Amino acid sequence: MRRGDVPRRVCIIALNAYPAIEPKAGRSIGGLEMRAWNLATGLSQQPDIEVFFMVGHTRPITSTRVGNVTVVPLIDRFRDLRFNVSRSIDALPHFPWFRTRAWHAKLLWQLPLLLATRPFRNRRSMHERISEQLEQLKPDVCMGFGLGEHAAAIVRASERIQRPSIVGLASNADLDAELFSDSRYVNHYGDSSDDCRFVIERASAVLCQTQWQQDRLTELANRESFVIPTPIRAERWSTTETTEPGKYVLWVGRYDEVYKRPQLCLKIARQCPDIPFVMVLNRGDARTERDIRKNATPNVRIVDYVPADEMPDVFRRARLFLSTSQSEGFPNVFLEASASGTPIVTLEDFGNFVSKSECGVWTKGDSDQAVSSVCDLWNDVVSRARYAENGQRSVRQFHSLEAVAENLRNVVDTVRHTPWNDSTSRLDVDPKRKRNTGNEV
Image (tube, rainbow, N blue to C red):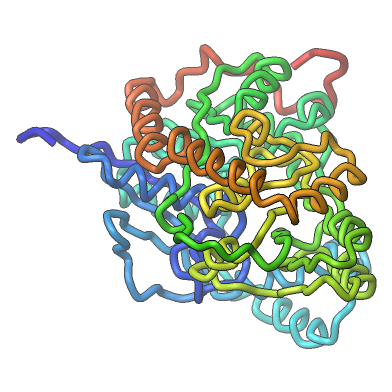
């Protein structure tokens, strides 16, 4: 940075991302959270950028400086408890006030505790709490992810302090057509049409992970956007030289029938009885968890939790990586597998990554073809070596932390010089309308 220059101040807000910084703080680290932290880390290495990273946590954190990033905690002591309860019950606006989706004994004390402490908890809205922090930080640009309630709170908070906002799409589910056409629609993640349309209308800039997302956003909302690939710190995942083949087929995800689809992994494993599978499964839908545990075959080992700093070794010890996901934006596990030198077999090819980089096999949604590919590649040393080399090359070329951070810095510069309330490129959306039909957006 030249003498006299003032650094750009960027605040990235990812309320569930603290375990990506400190693995001991929680077991669930999703792709959004890891992507947010990697972008913060990469951006902070730019000589003219000062990065703040706002996270939610249940208690004060021991260190607010990690590398070049200043970590800003938003403290909520009952946050994890509310999350655990919300996985099992749905709140109702009338008696009996809630509906149980999955019963467990802990609800006997968790529900009364939440009810008893409700009058004493901070009742300010999320955007008010974020605004309070932003008013102290005075960033030039604010950034969040997804199109749901949290992203809407970030955009509102940015407007309150009169700063531009950047929002990155979290998955292809953000681009569900019904979110743009039916004001009453709520998707599988609980994101409402109102929040989605508010974010698209009011954010100063939108980031897409892939060209498909950018084209889809233009089609649905006539909204301009930037494509910023998902970054990875490849040096953490790079494989060491070894002639020993991997010991299992790896699957990583959560208990979720709709998007991650672990049941398809079991189906494929059942048809490959002589090949060991390891499934690393994070918390998710309780009913799906019961079904997966009940139906797991003898060649499948279920692992409930692996600390984030041990995951590179888990990938390196795998002979193949299997993906059964659908509707994701761009899964981090593709990059982690490729950086580790682990070939991919996938039912869906997000961003055409596998077909373009030639780092594995895309079965075009055919689970039977996935069975054949897993069985063939398990014994094909030559093909695995070729796929591994191609994947590592693609990661270095297109997804390195340095290259992605430089592209994001250019977006920050563009947005920083845009008036925070400039609505010339935004949707003409009336939030009071109950419903839109056809192509009216």
